[in-house]
Image (cartoon, rainbow, N blue to C red; front, top):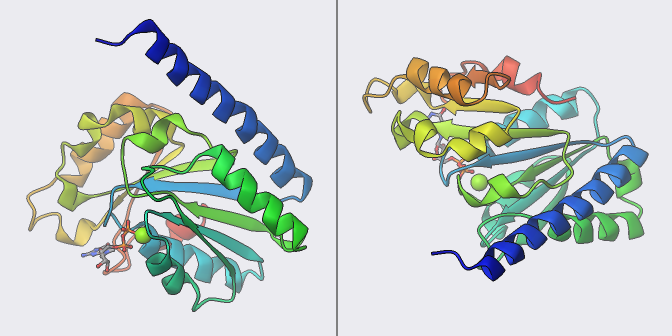
Length: 219
Ligand SMILES: Nc1nc2c(ncn2[C@@H]2O[C@H](COP(=O)(O)OP(=O)(O)O)[C@@H](O)[C@H]2O)c(=O)[nH]1
Ligand SMILES: [Mg+2]
């Protein structure tokens, strides 16, 4: 059973996060930077889809920053380094999500180096997890949750909070839906039943499906 003091600590942490997220949002707005919080389980396709977004943004001559948040951030950072963008590895250690405080340090650091002022957009890959990130807004413009069909088509209903928290849900790996006996349609309907305002995209990175709509989310 939850003790009252534990509940108070949780509420304080979330309130404090909200305050810092508002500061992050103001700083990003000041420099006209669009920001995106990309959430989803390990292996759902976050890095692969972000790579596609980066390519599309670079074609539009945007200056892109990408924060690779992970328990060990080096691996995804190396995948992003092949693009002409600013890559910021953010090791979270034992933490299962990014929070506004971690992001605020990175923003301050980029500002001090004179990098932030020149960015047009900032993409933040959250730690692979469908639970922890849903309490922690970062000050982003858009929250995007990615699920893959291989997680099972009941994955949405099992994790309602993150779908209520997000602006967009991407159902990825639809190329293997039949093989894993999953219905992308059911997953879409589950998303909408939890959050009627959510925008749902169905994508396949491997078969190039829905990737124009995906890239168009970023500007
Ligand atoms: N079949 C299939 N595999 C995909 C798709 N998108 C990503 N993958 C693969 O799924 C694995 C995990 O992708 P990654 O982008 O690293 O996921 P992350 O952990 O969420 O960042 C990689 O082997 C990708 O090549 C897709 O649409 N279809
Ligand atoms: Mg990744």
